[in-house]
Amino acid sequence: MEINEAISRAKKNDQKAFNYLLDLYWDHVYGFQLKRIHNENDAEDVTIQTFSRAFDRIETFDEKYTFKTWLITISKNIHIDLLRKEKNSIKHVISKDDKTVLQILDESPSAEDKLITEQHLAKLLRDIKKLKPHYQKVINLRYFQELSYKEISEELDEPINNVKVKLLRAKKLLAEIIQNPK
Image 1: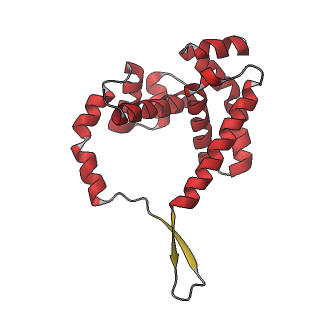
Image 2 (image 1 turned 90 degrees about the vertical axis):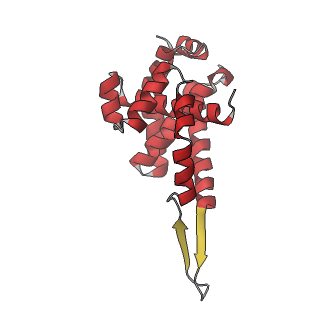
Image 3 (image 1 turned 180 degrees about the vertical axis):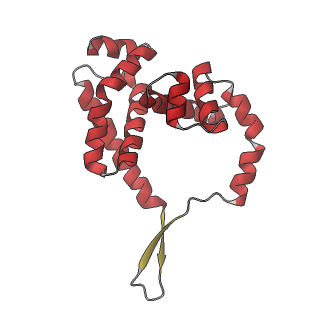
């Protein structure tokens, strides 16, 4: 498959074209982020988000530019957004002498968060059923059967990077269903 053909097929929601583009450009985007972030897990997360965003917005891709440059630009913007969010999510605790600034990240769920999660499980299951079957399956394997990416990859007989992007897209679609119930 040639790149321009893959892009036009991806614009028509062709999953094989998405996989082709993912396989072709994964190492470029991941390598770019690894040089910036110097952390394999974070670079991988940004790369997954890059492909997810690119595939969600593929119809906006302008053929005047190279696809790789477009992906790298998306990747750069995601990394900048994450840095901004990180900076804003950190609580600054200033000691009495105002000389020491401690940064504390609060990620533990509150009692309210847990209650909301439990109450909404039934609704969540109904919303998951609104997803396409392949997205339902990947959500089920990851969050209900608690399989690792590697185990999901083996179960679905798909490359691990495809699983990660599919899972991210499934979560994004599920979030849209939850926010905009029809």
